[in-house]
Image 1 (cartoon, one colour):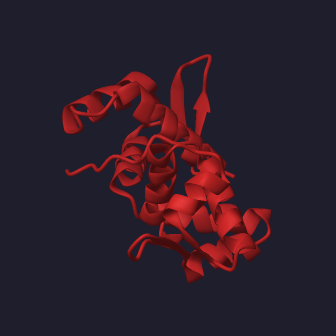
Image 2: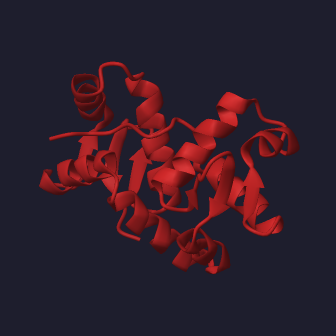
Length: 159
């Protein structure tokens, strides 16, 4: 099983990027964008990479361009937006691994340590805890997975 990491940025920043792109006609220069949203270049590049992994933007040359999927996401109502994001997340290997693991569990729950071990094994160059935090953030936003902080457990969201 191959697992690819995701950028460790809050999904809210990805959504903010899409809104900014929509406000300027769907296309923006990366360097001007970093200045306009007051982000360091490295930080905005991670947000752009996240949006690109999700299929919401493309990056020809030094531009960031909103895709048709990104445009549909912005026009959708809240539940449709979450549904579209959920479908995009399921295309990413790290989310397929998490969902598959949870589906194999008797109660569709698993301790977070199990995922920290999976990430450490498959992605030794990544900070497993930061990666898990991003997976939980993105997954909760899309209502794909949930997180119980008291039990330190992930579960499949039944919403």
